[in-house]
Length: 418
Image 1 (cartoon, rainbow, N blue to C red):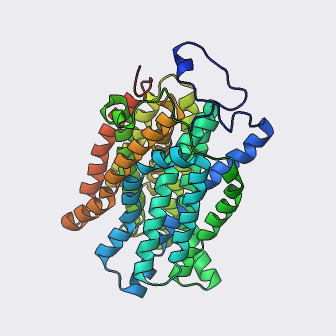
Image 2 (cartoon, one colour):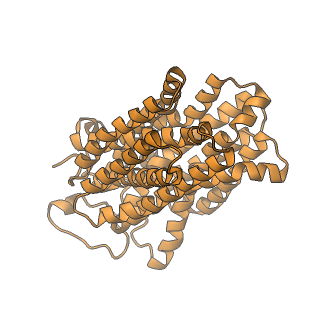
Image 3 (cartoon, rainbow, N blue to C red):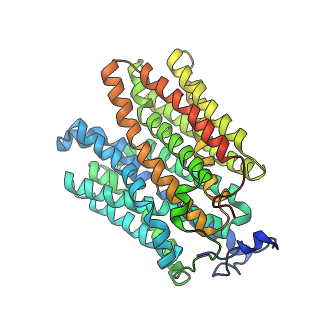
């Protein structure tokens, strides 16, 4: 599972050499083929959010057409996050047994199947397809992190940033384009959801030729046992940082449009402000991991991203209509920074490809199970209190342990020290 760094990487001797990845199929990848390969990897990232975000964009139509209750709608929206947490630990095992390329092609096929199942305009296929999509994305989330560590060892920051940008950008495009595409093509809600399966089909066609290059991966002799990560303090710092940022990210992006609408903005204006937030998130999601790789320590970046989130949330509480675009922009800058840094930590704090996969699985298991609680709890607090202040203050409070965990994760070093 662990070929060496891409051509041109420097070699080392001594203790670090013992942890170097073993030779594998990507060892001789020519530089001229690296860019197409990088684009293929990023295409997977682009597929991970549209099939999920499209449900939120069409949720009102789904409810009216099917009679879906508010509670069931909440379950449907939260189901992918639960899948991310539950299925993430399976990813390293699948990648070791079948190889990363074969695993990625398989999950893309499952993703495509989930989109196809949702073509049937009924609730059981809708939930079944969403379950398949959530499981596929959960595995892909982990395997792509390990793949970046394996094949782009010298450019982990750049590739992690580009991958994060694909995640944020794919979700933003789906949020903005799903309804216009459905209306323009004269489709019902099920057709609107299935449209994004075409993007998965493109990814399957791009990755299918790579099946012959993948195979069962050899376990690193230098990699520690998977269970030991759960007793590693640095691994827990990475996992908790990712958990707190996931909770804030998914809660804020779920409720931001409703927040603005409740303060007198139209649906269209609220959508524009969410787009502003996502646009600025794309900026920092690309920039921060590059800065992180150039720094021996990344604690300041974690604290800065957390502070931006807190300032924006305080601004939303204190002056929701006074500087709406400013708060949306600051929130986007903060969310993009902590999201991309959380993903980058999974590779940067690991010595080997296998450790990166294991740390990614642990972080995403913890992170998404915590994040799944956020939107529902925030909504419940809003219903009970009758206002937004309590929930927003709660998110500000969560930004504090996020900053602490990020500062600890950013102090350098590797998990499973030897």
